[in-house]
Amino acid sequence: MSTPSPLKSAKHIGDFVTGAQYDQSGLTSSLHEYLHGVGHEPFHEHARTAGLEQEVKSWSTSDSTEITTEDTVRALLPKSAIDHFAHETGLTENAVVTTLQEVLPKAVRRMAKRHEEV
Image 1: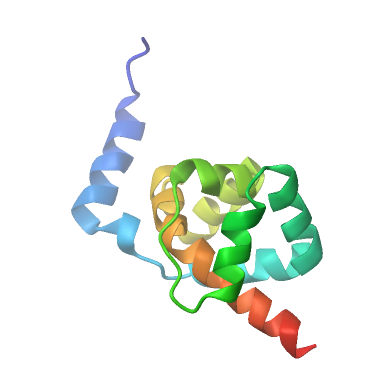
Image 2 (image 1 turned 120 degrees about the vertical axis):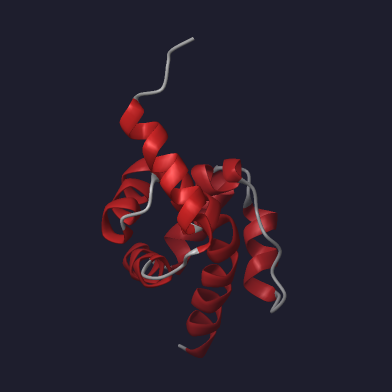
């Protein structure tokens, strides 16, 4: 078992003290940009491939979305996207993933509404 680095531990403590895992500033905008770039159909195809089609469909059709799991976030978004969000927002990867558990279902719903309007 490896010992966490002091810098990594300090970031986690900083996230806790500042409430960063609950701070959605910038992350929602970055996520919407990412989803817009990926596109509705490719994102849903990826969800289907990942075995998450039903969950993503439920987000797309319901205005009252549930919080999802860390595993679901990590299955739907590549590490490079999560790293990008961390860089853009200044949050740690863990804080980004924790926040995405709430934000991703809402963003997928918003993407679905926009897709329906087209």
